[in-house]
Amino acid sequence: MSYVLGIDLGTSSLKGSLFNESGILIDSISSTYPIINPEKGYSEQNPMDWINALEDILQKFEQRVLDFNKELSGISFSGQMHSLVLLDKNNEIIRNSILWNDVRTTQQCNEIMNIFGDRLLEITQNIALEGFTLPKILWVQKHEPELWEKVDKILLPKDFLGLYMTGKFYTDFTDAAGTLLLDLKSKEWSNEICEQFHIPKEFLPPIYESTDCIGEVRSELLEKFNLYNKVQVFAGAADNACGAIGAGIYTRDKSMVSIGTSGVFLSFEENTNKNYEGKLHYFNHVIKDKYYSMGVTLSAGNSLNWFKRTFAPETSFEELLKNISKIEPGSDGLFFTPYISGERTPYIDSEIRGAFEGIDENHDLDHFVRAILEGITYSLKETQEIYEDLSKEHPKTIVSIGGGAKSKEWLQIQADIFNTPILTLDIDQGPSLGAAMIASVGLDWYSDFESCSKDFVKYSNETFPIVENVSLYEQAYRKYKSMYSATKMIMDGKYEEKI
Image (cartoon, rainbow, N blue to C red):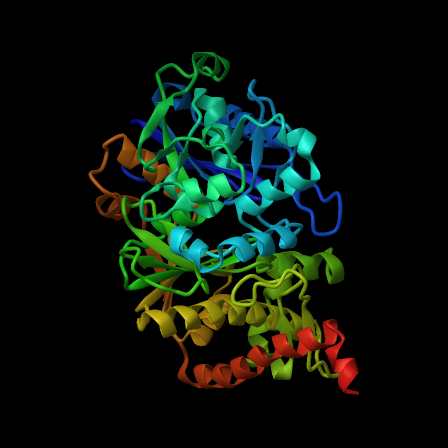
């Protein structure tokens, strides 16, 4: 039976998930790589680390799956959005990739908004934020002009892997939408934006639909990895779009919450007519001419990782979370804001920082852990609130994927705070599942994603809101929302001025 391989290029690791024609998971392998932080607020990676990780997992699949080299038919990619990869005319890497969570570009974001204002929203359906690709390009132009002179190609992370695999220069619409360079309605690179910022359009790759076949794995790589047959490579999609497809988000009745390093609240959108006033991101979906809106919590799982690393380094995550059910909803008045590296939705503030508030002598480690989970979920609820206020819709269910789906206690917290039933996936492979589904549809194993999802996407463990908890959390959420402005005043020194 033939296989498809979905590859997800994440922030801390590359993950490959191998499925057969019936949507059954055969094996899953990950390979990690470091993040480089040369200065405060800087976040970079060496793209060669991604190549090494890809080669590592391909070699391991060959070792662990006996017929992998004979039955692999298709590969597709998912990848971290926005991160900037610059290549010269020889396809050599010019500098480290500047990642999505790098916040050095505040000045460039202000420049973009000062020049374009609401016109940017008209063209791209988004406003300028530090995470997007365009501000990173402007930063390189200003601070590293000698490197900008060498640029011949501008790529996104997953497409750098695709270039390595096929020799083809390309991207897809879901990733292009996250650059702040795509005219969302015309589905072309914006002449207006490129000309304003002196970005030659030939630097930007041709744009394909996610299921388009870009080419085949290069012959030298077939030989290197002992692959017997020609293997088709499909354009793939941004990680959030892949996560959404892998969670079955292709109708209006479901939304998705994804908790990884960052956190995302995402909803399906039918067309470009929705106006979220720049309060939510608006991007092309994997499904042709469909879209999704989303908000981002910059430090979701990263907040929990920070706490564990700092205060309980010898404790496993399972051990860390095992007693939180003994703590009442609201953590006995203890609050946490997950702004440890700034915040995206709804505040767009790279300078704000997190806080615990309401600490008293009766709080112990379990209170702090539960408060962190609640604070992350409150932050994601702020996106849900914007979505429901402006769309006038409330999802019937929310599919939770990633780290937030691995704890039944956290799932109950989500159901109660979102006041919505929560579904989980029977097999949660994250965005690599969506990438594998793209390859399956691209190979014509399935006619569309709806039929594909019947085999690949299975739900389990629906968690329902508890009425009493919903009421408690509604009161606590109102207090949580006041913490940003109070913290902002203190950080800006305005509180001192009032004393």
